[in-house]
Length: 246
Image 1: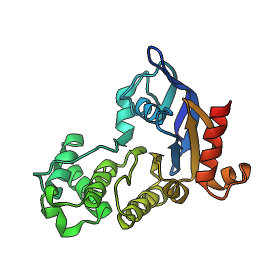
Image 2: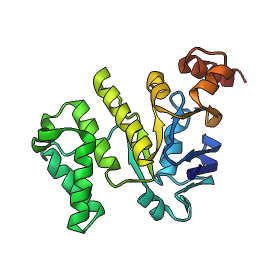
Image 3: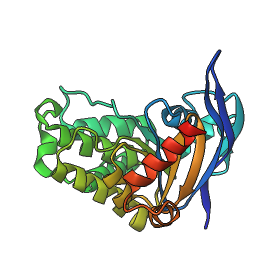
Image 4: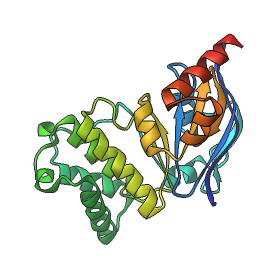
């Protein structure tokens, strides 16, 4: 399988805290990889280094053939990053927001139109795109933001808590959108979420990080067999508690 992301020994040392310690994993084309861990485990720091928002202390990550250390500007052309706290301009209509964002990436009017049409199809908001974003529900905003994030066809989409704060139906729709983009468009995803049900449903492989160390990776089925667990919550608990003991 073609590797879209290869992380090798990625490390982040703050003055007195080793936030991430020699983390290594990879993501194939069209694969959905979930990075999970307790608060303060280092997952957000890892994501931000891969996104080129933080500089690594050691190690490297290669996205689409480009190093985050040596070619960060090229990496940014290959990725999209949607943080949990992302928002949109409430006084803009949804369609104008998409046009504005597409204009930041392209100057050719045809490319802008194609980009916006793609986002319209992905978000499924229909005529509501003509309304101001300030009138949208949280679920609608999240759909708009996700469509904006993937409308440029990035090689790797990095999503932090993609369904945080959404009701069950909206969360299910977002998960289905992610799976469809991976299966039909071959887009790769790096997800972070505290929702184990979500992770089990949407991800192809899972990595569990604790105290800056990537403890284990594998498919949900593999991890459940390895830890004799009924679900990912039990796997997560056993991996994290075992790390605390040792």
